Image (tube, rainbow, N blue to C red; front, side):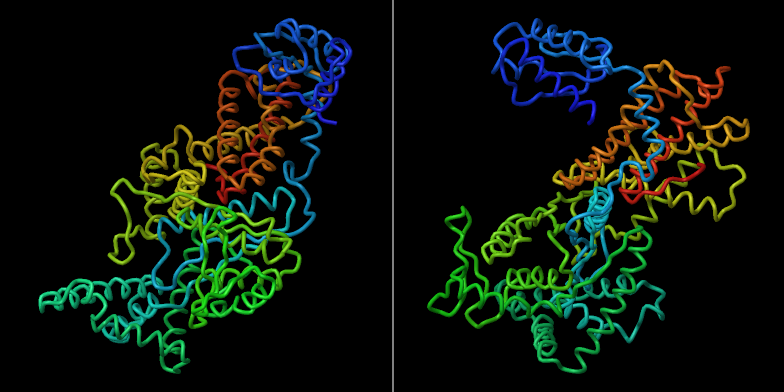
Length: 592
């Protein structure tokens, strides 16, 4: 039984004995820094069942707890808050348990698997800053849920068909002179993306020319020869025209090869891939099945709809009058197919921007109405856009911040700052390059993941690579400081061990309390699908460690037992930082 549940049991017993009342629950919070205590019982909610002065009630319960609970050594009451002092022995025992626990904080795998979808790009352009937030969120949430005890499948659906793909294909065919990633030295996704931009430039010229001939802008946009040609190319692709399909396959492969380089660079992976060219016909059978069940209704024109007005939503089309699918049809079919492919999946998480909030409300409701039990465990990991100080990004106009360029930029910024600090004597150029990438990527990932997913982000590369404050490099630097202490301790033959009982320095106690919170923090982050909870926990731990480092002598003390315990505590904090950063997809360097 945890200390909190032990205290809760005794608080309820105290209320029953002293006031002859039944307390349904006990509310706890961390003791505020300015008061003595380790855990605080909030008295105010008790006034619903116990009448009286909150200070007096808190005092009587405090006296009861000191008498009955071995771990509680003292208390004080501030207004309606009962602050309890927990014995050092309790924290020493807890720390010994933490030390003995392999993979501390993580829970063994059990129960149904969860499928997490993220990235899901189009094959007509490279990954950009918006994708970076998506990829980092999806990967991190996958790792957190895995650490919380679930099997996880990481997947994506690649939007590899449609008019936007044909635009890149047509522009390459017309203006590309047969160039390839090999002949240009460009990554394949960059090369194809350039032709998507080229199409837009040439299309705008055609529209302007038609407007000059007297057409309205609306007419010109529909009648521009390039667009008509792209539409014809799409028809050919859908009809299976061999030449069109061969070009489509060749250019898509260039893009996939480019994506893989970016994923490897950013440090994320996938267990499976779904392609819209394979899934866009899925779902039609499920619509038929839904019509029989009365989930859907057919209009006189033959189109099929789902009426969700009683659920506070609207009527949603799921099949057009000509029998062709809409996005919703495909998404219904793809979700069902995924569970067929992975029968142990009991829920899915879709990492998609908040502009799709309504789409997922509708999708999840339809799947529930179709009677799938796993549909109760569907979650839209909705996130806000990423803005830059310079403004909004547009792929068509080529004003997007490319993911690869961004990775290079943060690594270069990390390099500049590290050089200024001048702490890399003795490093080879290769070692420096690897370190800059570790620091730069850590800065980028932490800057994005420390923010609640639902909030918009203004990303400032320079600010992210700051070695002070709530940043990735600041946390990495603290980890490096701990490793330096451990190396020094090894040289001095100081073991990282805990021998017998001891009185704890307040800073030691605070650190143990924070380390103790790590498993619950993982569970909370998994439940809320929020890497920000892990990021900000890690920052709090690091701040506390730095305060400990400044106020307590670690290797500078003559007391051997103190040295050993503080080295052991430092080692454990370092392991938690490394583990927590691992859940964010961030590496920690040994030196910097």
